[in-house]
Image 1 (tube, helix red, strand yellow):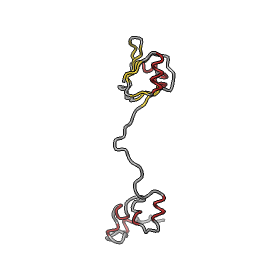
Image 2 (tube, helix red, strand yellow):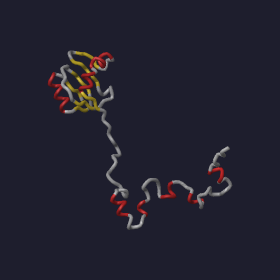
Image 3 (cartoon, rainbow, N blue to C red):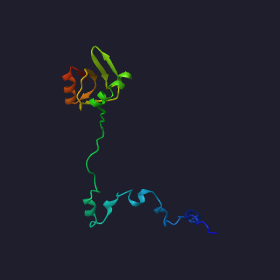
Image 4 (cartoon, rainbow, N blue to C red):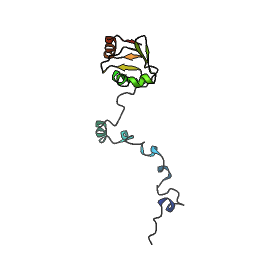
Length: 144
């Protein structure tokens, strides 16, 4: 009968270092200069140019500390789902206009990638020039 291999951990029980040599070596990422390619600056001068060419050393670019995310919606999406939005009362018909409050729906900007035939009165923070032109050409309004 084949005997199961004994695990390395159990075979090292009783030893102080479990096969790692000095106790100091068996630590976290600090033992090898960090994770990944960090710690490459501590190389000899002959090896540094190859690392610098790959862009490993130093910082590149910048990170925006206050990123702004804008949720956009296309006019085509409103046109295609008009009946559904009307049934769910996201669109309300009032005074010959179809009123939509995109801000309450969670959208920040309206983009215009389709022609419209209906008069809309849309409340939204931002609009593209094209969407504004297309809505106003039919007689609609955009409220910022």
